[in-house]
Length: 331
Image 1 (cartoon, rainbow, N blue to C red):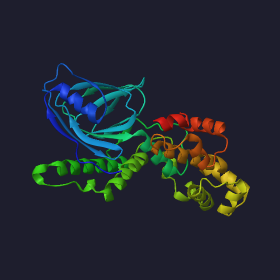
Image 2: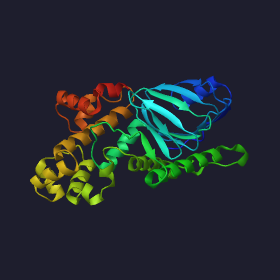
Image 3: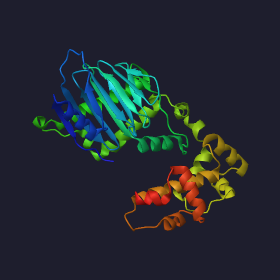
Image 4: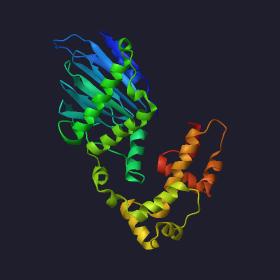
């Protein structure tokens, strides 16, 4: 994915204008200035796009409250000063500070109860599918349980601090590159850097924040994927439409069938043939999503990727992605 130039460098004392900019670049919202503050409202937003990520530095100048609803994306707010108190769903309030970033889930009504006037925040919005697919690629297997991130990230030390510094560098470079007076273009707009940088931000968050798969990600590589398992997985990825059998995959891996079955359950979380089916389902979904109106049919794509029984295929597809293949094609 490429990187666009900075899409919003915005200054206003009008609350409705500020709300509209946040709605256009991040999320639809209701924003209210809280009474009793000593500061005047003065929004300053610098926002850019990095593929599936939206990044920016934002401040409002006065204490505000925001109601956002469900975000539909993963999101991290890193205060550079001041603090931000928020809650999602029925959970307790969480306070984000300069030492502790706030981490938001895609689901659950979101309320920023107080965003203080002295709080300048680095905001990172991540497409839900992009982060979850990155996790699956890092693990080398599908993730069937929704990814739940901890609501806080320590940015004062360790991986959290490193990740926050990377976000800071990206925002600073995009802001400077947007300054027409400097006549500059951000280095991050180069296709040679934009895609690896997007992956670095997604990988970094998955390694820094607590979630159920973090220990597995930080385990030694040889524990994650023994060589025979990797050989079998690579064979499936290269030829997912091939009529693999347990014995055939064991031959690819150069081990016995029973060893491969046990190793897949331990390191991949499913049997070898279930992995074959999952890779095929993902390929079908990718092709259906990329197809234009009338270009392909569900049955045609399913047969191409090795699914012979369309009824059973539709059930498996729905169980994996939460929608029917015909719905994916229409969307």
